[in-house]
Image 1 (tube, one colour):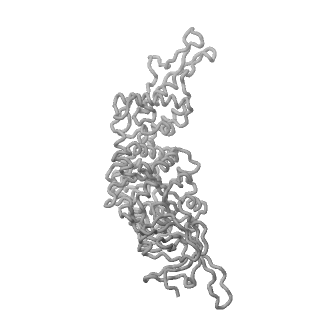
Image 2 (image 1 turned 135 degrees about the vertical axis):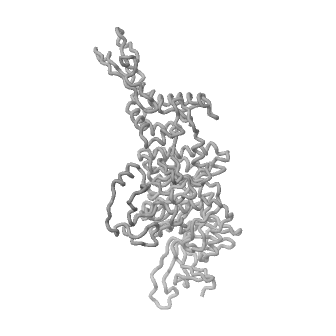
Image 3 (image 1 turned 90 degrees about the vertical axis):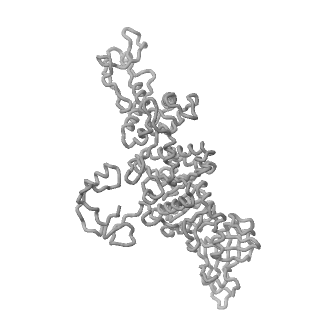
Length: 637
């Protein structure tokens, strides 16, 4: 009979960090008792301890096996040769502190013990409670909180990955709720780029929501991204489209000219005209830019009467009264119209385009369309940030930055669900670049990232960070992933398809919350990006429960299989699956009575459907005095 109930086997083979353990005879039942607690022996993902003098090595069980049971009676191993494969992950030294990595290796016949709850508390217990935040409970010991180091979680980046239905959005909401506790972190600041508008409900008590079409009754604010805050490259992609080098150079010169005009009318501290570039965040009138280029591209060239064919003069073709047929207006994006001129003679003497024309009529037409389009008003007509013809504005960018990252609310949700899909990649890249540049240049100020770090949450990241994407979003995230740690800017990548994300970006995430992943390619991508050699642990991903995650990386002392604490039922993201059949289930949050396919048919009003479609908003408001009631089985508002 073994004298130590925690002893489970001995070391038989050591190869780098992989250790093979032979179980002792008394471990054949797979169950051990210690201080009134039962411990399952040989559970994949469980921990073992190998004492080496004053040091104890810790490892994770990655594989379990057994040889054939012997046939002879009285054999010393009646249950066969049972073994464990263990991956070493860290050690606890004489000072009692756990550290990642190992300074020495075990040898043959060294004893191997189970890791008790007392050991787990010492390993996962924080050195300084302020640095750690609880995100859930250990799956193997639910009395022990799962603690993550907030310093390493935020600035060294993290990723939350899991298939649809694994509880990913709920997990993210729970994590953000823990990271924004007002009593512990009153100055925390988190920005969420919410692609589908899921988080406003879950984080309503601690977030400011910005939408293109805000709901003022819910204190939502209008999302504005002033075009003049973009870099020149970002602006060209979002306005003109594609320009060749010559065209871009001429447009850049004109932008600088208009910014200089604006600066003379409304001086800005920190910049003078001599240092202006097309990238400098100084307002200018893009309507005036369009109008002047439109005139330039539509200018006609008329041969002088009686002059040689190569002697020409540029002039607008005027009406009979000496004025344009229609003068046009820059701010209303109305182009000028001129009368048609017919000339006789050889083709060389007929009306031609001006010698300095850029041949950008098509691009100007695209820009004019966007300037008129209400969907792009948040960008080109951003209310108080819209420049007048002389470039003056009522509000500067400091007001935008203060709304996003300087208010009392710890979380800002930039709801991009109403953004045209054609510009999503470019817009995300521009937003990230604006935030990063602002904190980068203010890094030594109290408002900067070093004094008050910022976490940026990128929902549905595979939509714009895929391997095939080389746009501004991917470039901005790569820059933040590589440099953000030094300046207090971290990212949280959230995706259901990690295999579609650029490996360069995912590998920069120091901590990974891996939820249920059935796809082998996705699991391989996560395993390859993790800092620990734990292939056996990641093989468990297909069988994780909803809301359960394996946390690996720098923010945890040891890899943890964790049940994430979900938010309250009324504060969960708007991402739950619709119920096909509902019959008054009291555990089904937000439903009353029957619903779905189980309800009897009733009169349906598709005029309301069209109203919401045209309104481009899922938020339905009943008209006063309307006799219609909510359809049975629908969620409560």
